[in-house]
Picture (cartoon, one colour):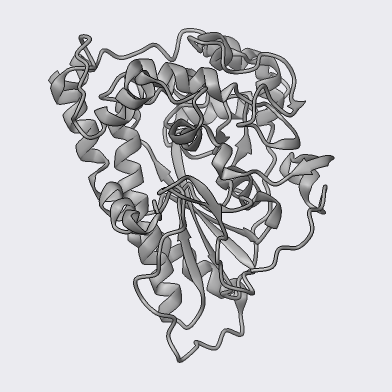
Length: 388
């Protein structure tokens, strides 16, 4: 596929809270911290090797509550469906869903459904996504700025072309809620089951929604962490707003989600960003940065660039120190989402008291909302989750 030349800002960026400078460069996935752990000796250490081995039950460090054999066993079981999908073409260099888009399991139907109402089609896609299990669904325009420069061949970690089909016009973004009780136990291997479960869920959901579109006669490429940056697509699709903790804050689940996406040429209308005031709240709140054990999160205003090559260039935003963050993951032999756990928006917004808090947080009295949150976000003991 031939790519358009890089452009800086585009119409709609301000509404989405996106500020792109003339120094912008598309991100190379080979430079993301997880991929670097396979080829960059400054990141690849014995601890990172043990981190990946723990997901194969080859190394199960036992360091007390939350890191017992059964905690690792549950976490790894939660990843099973995602792992099966990811590993099926690994011998061809494709780690699908992470370093390569997910291969189509059904051809594009020869008969193409005539669509004379893209708005109605968009509503239909959202209904289908909900049917298959997605908790959120938004649709935005295909924006080449967020595509990785190439995919990664995991046999030698070299860069190879995406080989995406021509004519893609839209990105369907799906949100998948993480279990709030497990999130409350971060950092722990047990909490990692909340992440793994949603990767397994989204692998199935994104493939099924894409198959539905292909059955209608249109291209659809299912994608998880591969191919492009999902966070800006999620923001552009109106699902939420970018926050200091590097996450998308949604009005339904706060930051407690994983996201997947589908690139398609199905005629669809696009949702608009919905700025509601999250940035203004993050401007006065540093709970995530204060709680980070390795100071990987910024406590100041958004800046352009980051501390190392695992940061995108030419975008003004809050950017984590990915190397410091991943070093803590490696130490734990599991993922860490303390920043998600302590986030004031990590609430059940189906409950009236939290809906009221949300109104305060997104209003000029946001400091009152921050004060009201001062005692929340404490860690639940993993043993209590098992016994409850």
